[in-house]
Length: 235
Image 1 (cartoon, rainbow, N blue to C red):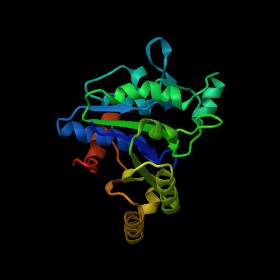
Image 2 (cartoon, rainbow, N blue to C red):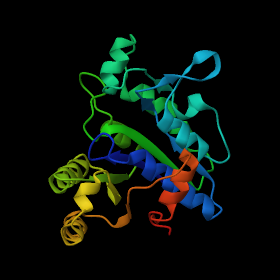
Image 3 (cartoon, rainbow, N blue to C red):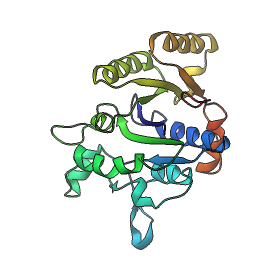
Image 4 (cartoon, rainbow, N blue to C red):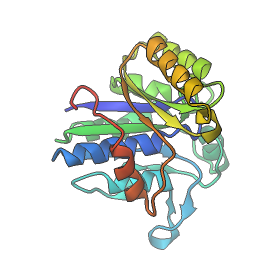
């Protein structure tokens, strides 16, 4: 069944909004879904017995149908809102690609119509002293969806990330633009020109452009995002 690794041009580029939106879109088509976030930092003690929970992982769990437990969605949760390898070090944990792949690979075999594995930060975020999280896409053999945080500087960030994905032997299956800085869209003509440049330069189809969205709940945000997205190779 279709499965993709979701990465971004930067932290807070809109990966979770895009991932949850694509899962919500698939559910509108009557498809089964699975959203995974193997590593998350910036977690809070809110689960059973005060277990650490991450808001992004919870959003993906909510869009996964049939449902599954939190630890399956996010097996490695850390409190500090810092790079995962640093958060893990503070917790006395050593992350490795082999361990993440061992957890995630069997889940890809579940009978789901769409599975999305969301990374942390950008493509080159470290996992330990030798490996980075991008390697998980390679270990799992997944094509990549790139979320471009639309702001000043995004053209270079997007092109460099796309080049790195291809250089690592992964297929870039699509990209989504997510407006993170409203000032970037203040000049409509310039904004349109930037989007046109991205469409020209990135070697993959655009799956949607997300404006700044407002909703009362994460589920509401996912549904709002779904209105602006198409599914890779399906919709």
